[in-house]
Length: 118
View 1 (cartoon, rainbow, N blue to C red):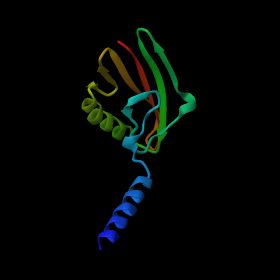
View 2 (cartoon, rainbow, N blue to C red):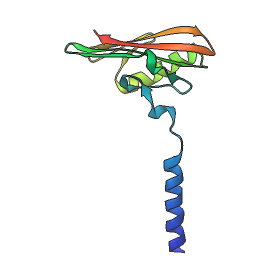
View 3 (cartoon, rainbow, N blue to C red):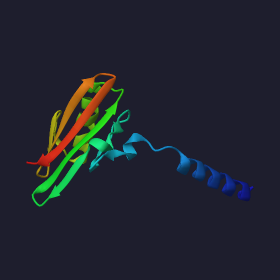
View 4 (cartoon, helix red, strand yellow):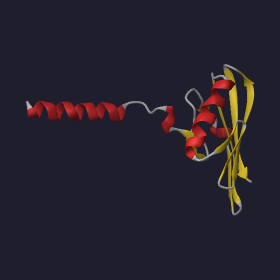
């Protein structure tokens, strides 16, 4: 019986390890500390990242069949937990400013993430 339980536990661990990642495990391109909301997909061909002595400059895009209000709500609730202050469209943390921009319409939305030094 003990042998069966060990094999069962090993099989369960392998199944869980192979499970697809959730959106909270993905981050905005160039912003390893800003999660990518479920329903958004990165547009890496449109991203720019500059690491300068006076701070980072990042412009990154993501798109999806989401609503602007849901995106705003997600980042207004999530970013303060990660040390950011403010509300959409502008957040601040440790000498940096993150701004959200929106193109398109609900259901076909493109979100722009712009990070710059203060």
